[in-house]
Length: 274
Image (cartoon, rainbow, N blue to C red; front, side, top):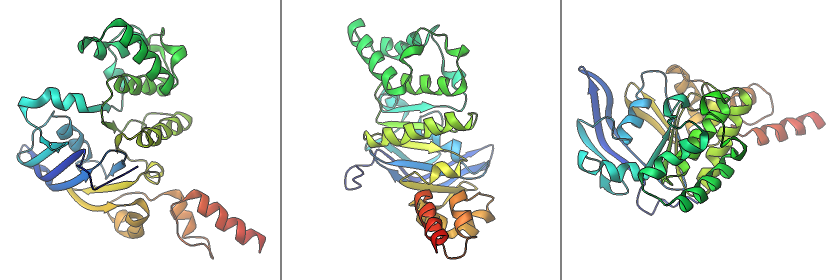
């Protein structure tokens, strides 16, 4: 679905940002597009989360420009920005406002002054997409971690942003809930959304269309996952893990290095039959 000939959904151009004279982002430039699933990785302090704060307007670049669909982010166009970007945080409890799940999803719609009929239709639709229809009358704070994240996703989807940021959204979840949320990211990409995931999960990265590798505020590598992980030794130098599939494939004689689990299973299966 990705078409990089069209205008970028979000674009960083020579962006710098520092805090108390400590540079957090240095000369950062990249583009992301609708229908693209992008993972941003790097060790703690590399600048990953600063990118999400810059994208959502919580921080302002001290040099360079950030554009959303060609429009430069500024204090004058915060409403435009919020209409195009949604974010799911690491701890969904920080996002809950309503007494029930339904109230929470409705909050943003009420701010847009939608009619009750339209709100009801949207809530039913996003609840079905997120698999939380049976939770609409529950209190958000009483749900499991995975359920809470799906509620947070539904609340964002209700506002129909073109860009959805997942900021370490799976880091506090159990393995099953992680798989559910990661699959949901892929589905959103398939629907044409621009999905940006800030993550430490290298297994998630294997499903992305593009990876941005940050180190000490600089973008040191970007590209398709299989190309980025060709430099596994370089990534390990900056304390990044590599996907288990790649690690295992490099240790099995007769198997070509790969980050694709299916390719790895098929290659090992062929060896087993010999």
